[in-house]
Length: 238
Ligand code: ADP
Ligand code: MG
Image 1 (tube, helix red, strand yellow):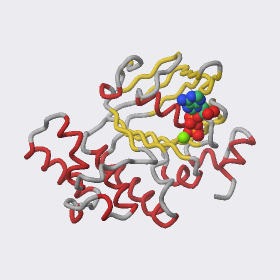
Image 2 (cartoon, protein in one colour):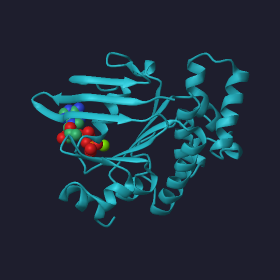
Image 3 (cartoon, helix red, strand yellow):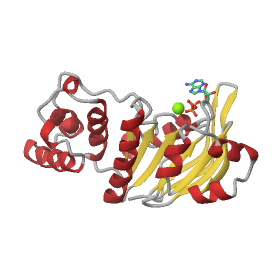
Image 4 (spheres, rainbow, N blue to C red):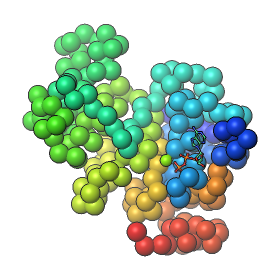
């Protein structure tokens, strides 16, 4: 498990500065949600934490270690995207275990780990199916399973539910909250959906134009929004 600290983090694409000095501490085991309108820099911030996108200046610490120059594979993180691509020709078992195969984990150990993950995600009955024979929610669970099986210290989610229909989204919100309670790992979760933020977060970070507008618990943001922007965003109907 690990604490994530961002220090005066900045990112420019050419002359365009999109992250304008972000300071943030995400506690060990916290479910931290980045929320804000489209284009405010949520994905860029997450991709910098993952190492998929280099930052322009500032520093990122994960578990007390400065990971600023480290490769994604060296950061102890796993990422779940909105457009999760499963391998269509592989079964659920093979999809979940794929990273372990690459890491040459022996088959028996691999199967044991995949079975444990499948139990947590209630995918046991589907392990021999191909992705096309799964529902949207089951596919998303497989994508999450691929992240869990690697036993990361920090999970990074970028709008993982935005392609699901409303009923499934609310079910997955509950499942992800339960998963967090069960694993106790640090989770950084990006969404533009304030309902997701308010129902899932220990801590919400409201972003606007590449800056943090406010950080607080859902109740703090609801009861005392720091700016009209926060009030408008948190208070607006979905
Ligand atoms: P969000 O996830 O909050 O919708 P993004 O982090 O994707 O926002 O984007 C933040 C800003 O950075 C936007 O103005 C976007 O156009 C810009 N941006 C993101 N990625 C790139 C890139 N690779 N090159 C140039 N501009 C980018
Ligand atoms: Mg985004």
